[in-house]
Amino acid sequence: MDNVHIKYLEHFVDLPGAMAVDMGCRDGSLVRLLAEHKAKVIGIPTGDQTPGPDGENISFLPGSSGTLSLENSSIDLVVYIFSFHHIPAESQKDALVEAHRVLRPGGRLHIVEPFSEGSYFELLKLIDDQTQARAKAMEAISSAWTLGLKPIIAGSYLHVERFDTFDDFRRRIITVSPARAKAFQINERAVREAFAHHGIVEDDGRILFRQPCRMYHFARVQTAEQAA
Image 1 (spheres, one colour):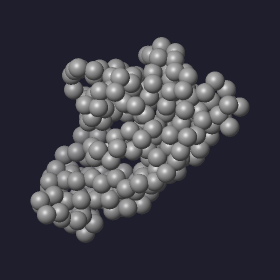
Image 2: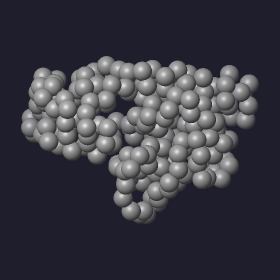
Image 3: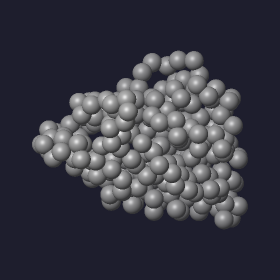
């Protein structure tokens, strides 16, 4: 995962020594990056992915966004990077409530969501069009202040995805879910054409795609009134 997410996060949170949870940690890339910055990190994977073994300052736990097996007020930082929109819309409020429960007073919730635009979105929507899911997620996030999560800052920046080859892209995508693997197979010709059309070949031969995203950063307070 591109370090741009960590660079922005470091502006708002002292990572060394922080107890952090990466929700929807996928292959564990962000977990390992946070640990490299001296945070103590718990990864909560989604779907059938296996992020890897535990390590120094790293552990992986089963669970879901709505039911974290963590004690009340025990966490300094909860992070959702490109994962909040994968929560069913009817469960997104529960996920925010659960984040508030496990965060210490003053603890931080950091969410980054991709916009439905950019060259990577144009490529990915041929396999999994997440336009509506992303819109629902941003709607839910905008109401977090009513749940005792005080908005600190919101802003936009550009994330990039890089692939060595089309087969590298295919490999990463089909491991996410059986549904994506099937859609990839059905639409492979169109996906291959879009990959060639939208991708930017860098000097080292890797292919770059742009994904604009929105960052939301909250502090946990005791009441909704304090969050306003």
